Image (cartoon, rainbow, N blue to C red; front, side, top):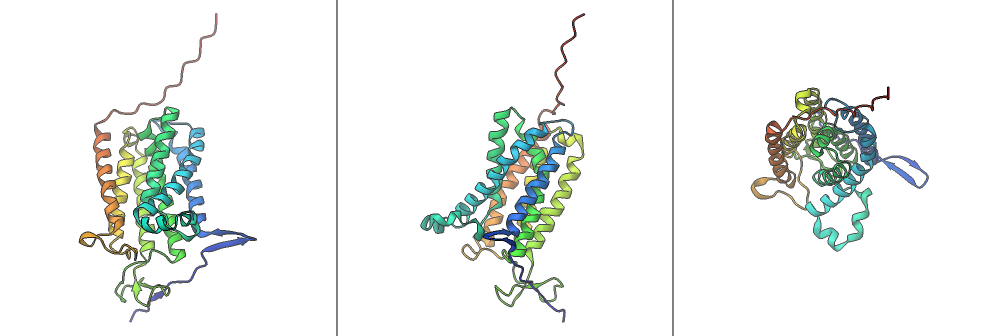
Length: 281
């Protein structure tokens, strides 16, 4: 018989600094935002340039608020609205977990729309550069889920070499679905996005990279949901689907629509600097 792995009980708190506790989950968000910000500063300068690096710096605050507020509100509305209606103060208890990627995506999309319109930036072109770096946050977030011992997988055959027992749940070997999602939604999707973003012909089509990301994430997330145990308070929905899979349907539709729109839309042109005034003779 192949020995079954047992989930190592990680401490969800990375380090205690007096009354302050730095958690792995918070660290994942911070690292993802910083690394994504640095990469996006380079992407916006690739031809055709769509924004300045200072504008990317400014947008980081907007994106952070969009992720946190959208992710939390999305979880409340999509997953446990009755609980938070009965206990509204619990909505502020972020240290207990409860973030939705789909909600965070809507939050960032709202922030992006408001920011680009305020500064006269092409919204879809700016979104394309942002879409390339989003998988960094997805991958790190799933690693944090694994460290926290949450969002575990469905029962797996004991013969599966990487089947894992989560003692806090039961003694049944399960899929470490958090790691599946980290590898597919994080690593694989990041590689795909970077490879597409290397081509100027792709960057010139505003909305194309965003469409590729939305469709790619929807497919990979829906696939990973086959190995992830549904939330106990929701369980399986119609036809054996999960809430995560249902939320991926509008994402996939939006991704396909953006891909078709971008392929038929106008080609972005490089920003031409204003000519310097001629010197008097």
